[in-house]
Length: 397
Image 1 (cartoon, rainbow, N blue to C red):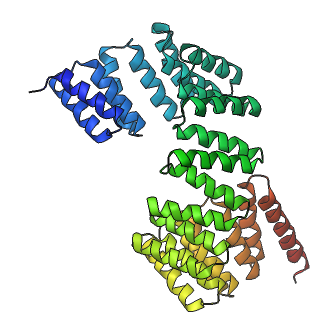
Image 2 (image 1 turned 90 degrees about the vertical axis):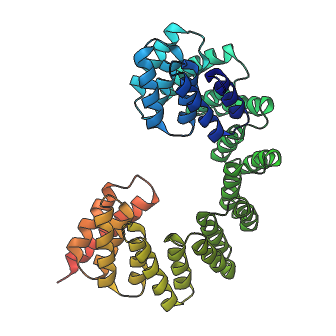
Image 3 (image 1 turned 30 degrees about the horizontal axis):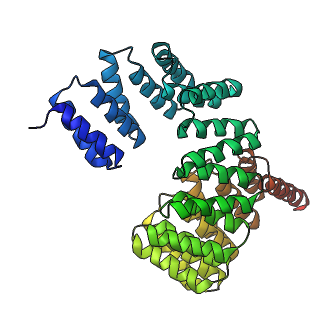
């Protein structure tokens, strides 16, 4: 019968091979055989944290900390989980305690750098992350987070240099490519961003995050044929309902309506409980004057998920465009009940009320939408609509 240590060693081998479920099983066997085997508990906590099972992770850490309150690895894990809960000040306390016990704990330094960045202490964040790199200059995580901090400091050229170093040292580290492409994208260097995504995908065809970013870059350049090609590959590799809905949206943008319709129908067949494909089909049918089919699909979307504001809102826009104002207002009233803080719902409700000449209610609804909308083109449009409604109120008998 294997010992607890043998189960732990086997778990480490599975973790190296990224066989996560088997690793978890071996770690639990190790802990069952020897509840005091701290290394197994720490490895299991790390596994749970990386799987975003934060509540289980924190329970395990707290239990271990009650027995080993000064263990730097446990304090580091506690700090990492606390960062996940957005409690950055408390996270820093745990991480500093860990560093008091183990000043060269690179994981504690990296996560302290993250917490400092999230609390706008950017110079301290950079200095802390450079300390981590002094311990291991090839650490992918430290390089990535340093680049992130430099980008937040608007030092894009320095961030790019760090990320180029990262992908040179770790050519299979997908997050490095995505971060680099993101900086290029927001610097309006779209061709460089596209090149980096292709470089990533040439090394790892299953890097779907990179593929999704590449698709969005092509869409941003209005190169819909290329975007469709990438999205087709995503559908082949993953094939979720959301993937086929996205394929339909791209086909619609490229004015390939038959492909859009096929894609939305495929999405509905992949997940029969999903309302989004039916909303998308309804909007496609409405745009091509297939009104009865549009009504049927909107009704199906509402049947599948009457507790989301989105199908109510989409159906209401269709009804407004076809003069059925009272029906539209009813749908938007339902949407407001479900999402009372959603600006788009409040704005559309105001538009429907204005068309129905219920100007006081319209003004009130759009005013609420305006208050919840950040500065930008949409907010300006709302303000202009309010002025038009106010002018109409003044001139109305």
